[in-house]
Image (cartoon, rainbow, N blue to C red; front, side, top):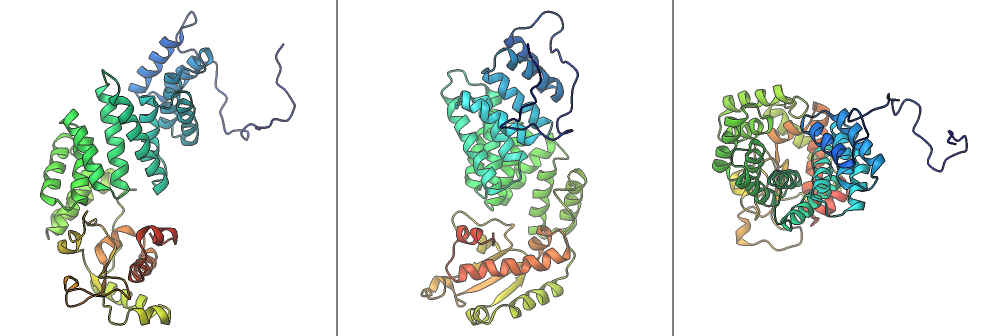
Length: 379
């Protein structure tokens, strides 16, 4: 006999209402279907983005064969499609506990971490590592699935782009483009990586190729707007950015309004409000309020700095000797109005971010690297 136990559980159920009670589900009408057929039905439902049916078919397959890694991976994909992210994480963890090198599970987990989580450094690092594991696993297959290979390369490219590793992103995006030359996602990721590497003409060509296939791709429109802005074509930049915002308003809110004169005054105020020791450290270190980073500053590093940086410290740390390569002004700081105005969501946040960016560049003046500054909340 079976009964619902009233004894306390080591793992209590979720609160009432957290999981809706559903009527009995049967993936295949009639006689009980074998697990392989249930997985095939789940796969078909995933292809149609019928997430509820995919989840039901995967669950039914798992009742028959609890360690069927394909069914667990399908369950993770369906949960991700339903935006039940925490459950999807557990499903992919279960799949990879069964088979740590299953490319389908690695691809699903990589997409979840690289695209669907919070965009944190840790999530992106996990997404990149999972995608690269999947690429390596697929390379050992004598007949690798091309679509799966493209998916893994794109997950790796997306994670690397968001991590500020455009050279790695470009490598993965170019592999995807080689596999499917006309794929809009592949050319878009490639264009973003080229933009971050300051290869603006190549980036423009790649992003325009994306728009020929997917005319309203919001990220391609946004990156093209940034390229137009750097070229001094503000009218085209505004038109492209408006189209990007219309497609993805949450990703591309309007830049905060602050004139160049107001920005200079706010930067001067931020310097004046520093503690006395920090103001003393800035003696002889000019703080510039600029519109955008100069190309020479960006490509002076290898790899180049991102064109979207909020600020820049030029020169050696305090106490280190200056060299002729540092120029007539050995040390200086620049803060960039347009990039900061895009980064902030409102004027109060912009004012705060001016101060955070100034403190970040002061950290470089004192010899701190980006990892140390990230640990201090000054990323």
